[in-house]
Length: 219
Image 1 (cartoon, rainbow, N blue to C red):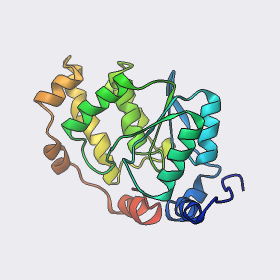
Image 2 (image 1 turned 90 degrees about the vertical axis):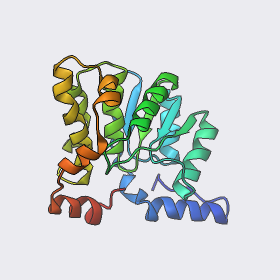
Image 3 (image 1 turned 135 degrees about the vertical axis):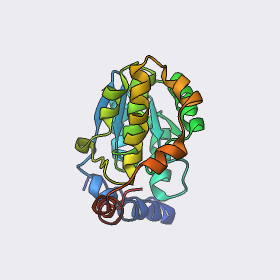
Image 4 (image 1 turned 180 degrees about the vertical axis):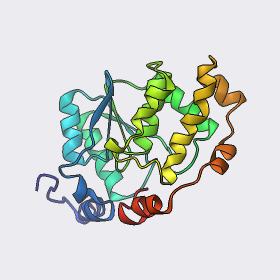
């Protein structure tokens, strides 16, 4: 199996074991959920070392880990592979089951301003946090309409809007009428957007929550 590599040490064995089994890396051997968002920006699920090397060969200069800083084997192997391949690894924390907070949205704008492209953004499955950040990239950087940007949150990427992850869809939907009135996104974020209200108004479906949390075991 190409995903595997001989561990160089006991710690290496632990890292690979955590990546393959604890982090469900065996499911991502052939399924990469890799897509182009816009020229120079891509999205995917968690890459293993082999895929990091392939990304470097493709010209990727930066990988953004949307799972935030971690200490598990998957993160260790990704960090080591990025260092060897000459790729900058950035840790950025996005949440899949909460309406984005305002600080995170402003931090995303700064990230997009400073990032060196071509770049790849990933979470665990490439469905929800990758979808959120891809939509924000299209909205903020590419200046696409919010309804078009929100299509990055779709079933074809593995996103289930009826589950708790549907809060991400509700977030964009809350902005739609204000965009129609000509209000800029960050004017809405700073002056109108209420994450608590979006959360109160959203209701997940039980079957969808069981699918994402118990069966697919999404983060």
